Amino acid sequence: MSGPDAPLRVEELRARLKEIGRERYHHRHPFHLLMHQGALGRGQLQAWALNRYYYQSVIPSKDAIILARSEDRNFRRAWRKRIVDHDGDGPQDGGIERWIRLAEATGLGRERVVSGDEILPAVRFAVNAYLDLVKNRTFLEAVASSLTELFSRELIALRIDALRKHYPWLGGGLDYFTARLEQAPADAAFAFDYIARNACTRAEQDQAMAALTSKCDILWAQLDALYFAYVQPGWIPAGAFVPAKE
Image (tube, rainbow, N blue to C red; front, side):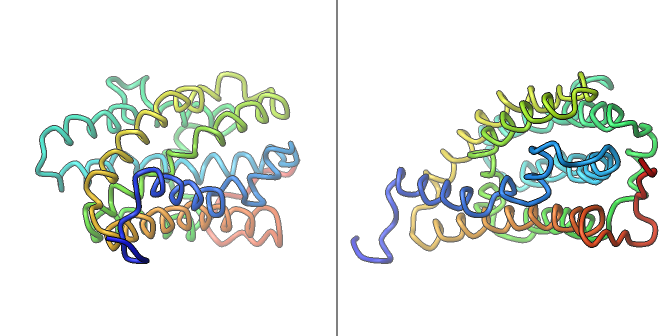
């Protein structure tokens, strides 16, 4: 088949997906740009770490939903690695625990972070929208939404260098990111291979690209909320985290 409705070749599909990342991934967000320039204060980093924890905490639930929707044991065997990566095999292991240690390195108490009581309402809505996506859209779209991992490694590497340079007091709190340098590319390779093999029509490929776009929007919306509350205009909603005056 040829023409505008013809399925994209594998490398064309990969290029289209990466283009979505270049245009819409949250590495371009003003909040992240300020972070990488060293322009955020401790309180703003605390707000980021605390709110981002809510996203980190639901990733295993998101992956468990995808796992439960699959009828292919080979897929389930591969996908369950993601849950172990984040939940860990023990109480002191896994991405969620490493993120808590990052939040503690900013000066926050563990219980304060884990409680989720001070999360921005818009962050909560955005993260819950991600769970709704993997529950309610097609299985192909649920898997495709994870493809931000195709381009996350570059942001992670940039972030590690920037945080070490500008916020050296974070110290070992950066272990979350160093672990993801290896985990994210492996996860992305598996997910892309699944999409490339199972999105057989142009309509299915378009669905996959739309799902990735939605995921980018969800990540962007979280940073919009942080910027609005803690940078400009600085309107913190009732009940949300209030940084101590520096």
